[in-house]
Length: 406
Image (cartoon, rainbow, N blue to C red; front, side, top):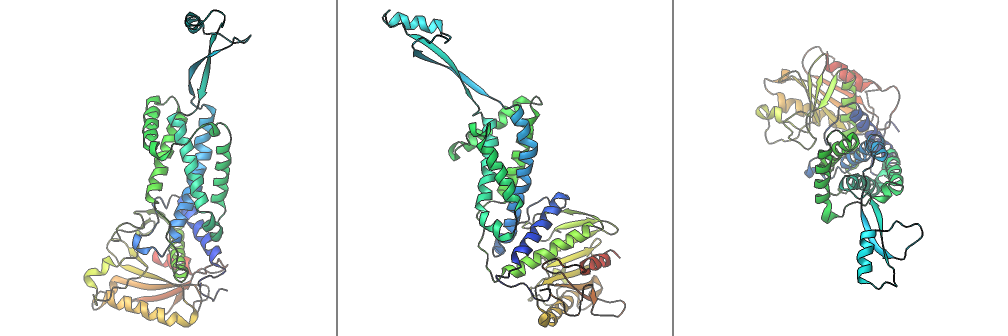
């Protein structure tokens, strides 16, 4: 199915979603992605990207909690309690509370012989422990809310992490700790922070808990709100666009050090990624701000998906992701030539070195990078294929990235 574009309800969509999630996860583990990748609110039709971010939140921070935080807490969990006294007949082995017993004898008849018995009632419901239970419950609840999208995405790791955490929550010591109700959540969080700060370095497990909580809360706030509904007609194109962006970043990371500069929903005038390697590159996403002053037809507001800046202030390479079948490649080529004209005419053509198209299907591209213009110098028009489902032998993206560093 290499030469068939993605369509609504395509049977390949779960595989593509799983591939996108695997790319985001690998880039996060490599330290490339550190900020939210959720789109701006006006792009609510792109529902899979918030889902990817929340899946990553469950899997990554769930693993940190399970593997780095909870084991230390379980070895030295704080416990509190208080003495409780009650009037009771004197059992043979009960330690009597003699002062209390005397007071009771003073007010009761001598024949009753009551004994005031004291018991130490132990509790683990301390603010710092409730904070950990709260984190456990939130992670498990988030995974449960994502159950259906997880199954549709073909992603299983986050569910496995959540299942392990849910099982841990049902066993001691965490089954002895209650999660705070919404009305008392802020008070418990503040009390936990104060108690952990007072411990200083004496209990490093609780310091790790607080550090984890702060990071989790930051992600949770940035990933708040309900998941938008996906439009089945829009999802294939959005998903392919996201796939091309992530594959580009992955390929750039093989030739240099890539770091994320801003959240995806941040100001589009700033680059999304910066690459330090044989050449310093900046990767912009969904913006044409760098061409605003030189746009030939200012009424035409179309912009390419990705702009790559080669060095400080240009030149630039444009990259557009097109989930088109072979019959529509010419349409995409004319659109790219329109970008080159609009941003470069009449005397800034040298500022844009090339325009490239990443197709989901092959026409003349084959498995490599195809140059539509064979003349030396001037602007190049390029195209290559990024198969929605991985196929061996397709090297167009790697060849395109190599060209950027020449």
